[in-house]
Length: 216
Image 1 (cartoon, rainbow, N blue to C red):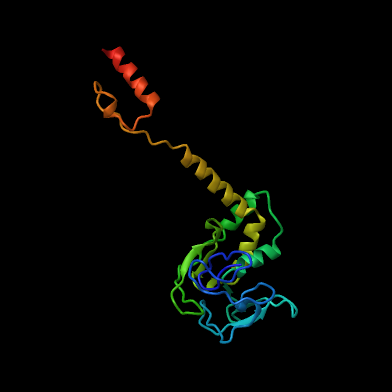
Image 2: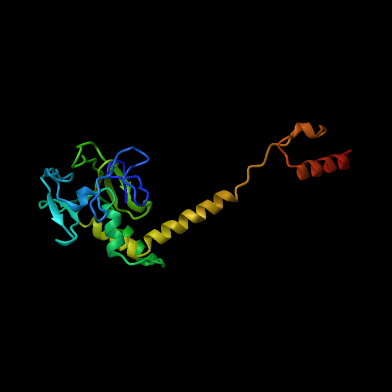
């Protein structure tokens, strides 16, 4: 569960956000109010500026509302809803289909446009979902994410092809590579004592002194 105000993760069983201090309005199913109920006022599509419809992609007993534009078929998902849809519709993935990921990356090429959030009407940020999916979504930190027609399908295909696994592997490799980078202290001029190189480890100071003695 994420905070509906700032999208920060909420501790299990708690409704008070430790980041922004707001209280999440929860229903008995543990969903945010905006997910379990249609919006009180129509939201304006970030893509074509038309009013959006509240679409129930769940059931009458377990509603799950998202906002969809009937004109351009764009979607607006409140904070946490995109991850919920992915976890619901995509089974666990442990392998990477690099060929499928390569084909998905070739579908890029959309025009760069900065759009307004359907809720607060502030300019949203452009974010590459998963940092490597190639789907550049429009994200409002406070309210959610806008996806153009077909982008949700591309994100689901990216996850099924192991995009998350590949991204996690890349992050782990970068962490290992960074940990192997050692910053050595600068060595002072030859001929001085240990005080000239206080940052050098004891073994290093011993070897340096031995080297100096050989020169002498």
